[in-house]
Length: 279
Image 1 (spheres, one colour):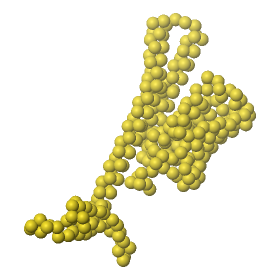
Image 2 (cartoon, one colour):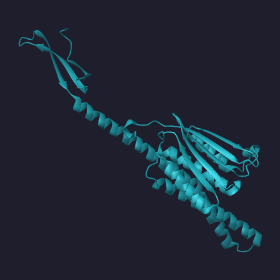
Image 3 (cartoon, rainbow, N blue to C red):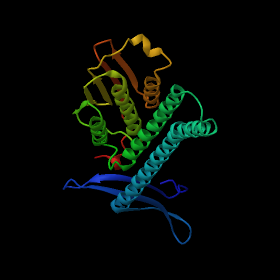
Image 4 (cartoon, one colour):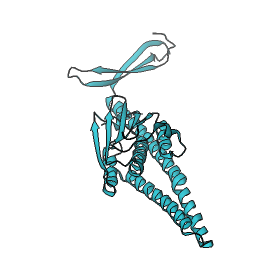
């Protein structure tokens, strides 16, 4: 009852006899008489549950929009970088070589064949990149990546002699679209290496959902290779897979031996799961 105390208020929660939660706004104001004499304090309480519920919905909506905006911007930046680094360089390479062939049509058949093979490789890389980007952009639910990976595995199996089996273990955690995209590129690069170099006919992709992370295991029954050769500068595919895993703050490991196939293991921690986006 300090006479000079200003009006004050608090908000608190109560539970009624039926177990329902209510928010109560409690206001306390000083009261003065006509002569300015302090008479005491007036207390009022009112149920503001509806207002608090609306405020919570607005806050969650704003958080969700912010998160989705950040996701979209991240994906746009990553796609732009891929288009520039891969597609842009390949097109520049093709233009340069085609122009060179036009200006210098001569040359030995072996030299021309080598140039055509190099240009075909660049064109195929560009084609595969575009297909991968379209697969990601057309995927309806990137928080459940299994359909995306299974669809791409079927594409690879149809054009090759590989038998690819995708399995799922545990309860899926929450992955952002940016995480799914990087995982997809790792998966694509692994299948590409197996298709080109492993001499395998069976591939297994295992999604193991843990409490805090996802483990992706990709194994084949191919010829394998000497693990000391991993450090060779020619292994760009492995280098890129490692770099993408580092971007996901995950871990990357590979096991292989000549004649015993290859197993790649990628462990990726889940990102935060906004309450407004939870299943």
